[in-house]
Length: 246
Picture 1 (cartoon, one colour):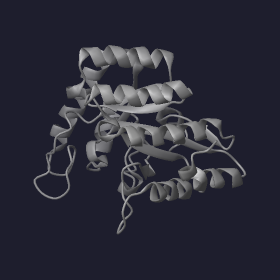
Picture 2: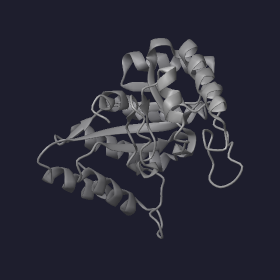
Picture 3: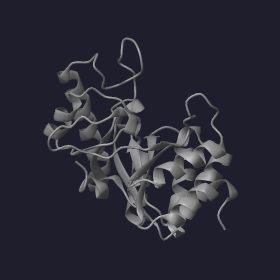
Picture 4: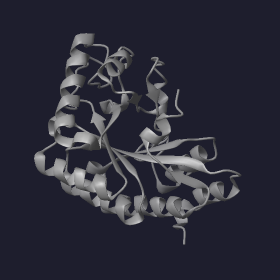
């Protein structure tokens, strides 16, 4: 049975003529390992894939071993989430890889973070980069390609960098975002999900385990269960989608 709050989503999926690709991206791995484990358990129980954005400076040996084990037995995918997840912008909206830093500084942090994750995660690491706060300077595109990271994942509202050789796989729905001018509720979230899934897709859904309550976790489980079982959805990953991204 579909959870009542998800009826708008199920209705849209029922009316689709073709399946829509959907992926989940959870950010900030390295923070609150217990909460991360609870979220990953939801996806593992459902046999569903999830992309995990890992903060290089925050990743400890114990979590690295756990993530490698999960990667081997389930649909967990691992990629780079910035370097230390700290703000370097002197004013305005936060960003770790923004315009207030030189290209050399951007390159140093990406390369150091990539090297650390490669050493700790080995071949479990995907060549994907998610910048903290979903923001980065356009110059980061060339940096990523030069280092060998061929995929960038940000929020759809960030637009596209358009760097040759860099695939972009954006997020469409932020689980915790409130619609402009209104309060975030289960109904507004269901409307956002339904609206995105009515389009051509793919539909990326962004999660943050460190701020996920038990109530939110149960709602996430409701959605994952619906999407796994519905014939008009294909749960996939960022790297799988990157092959068709421009």
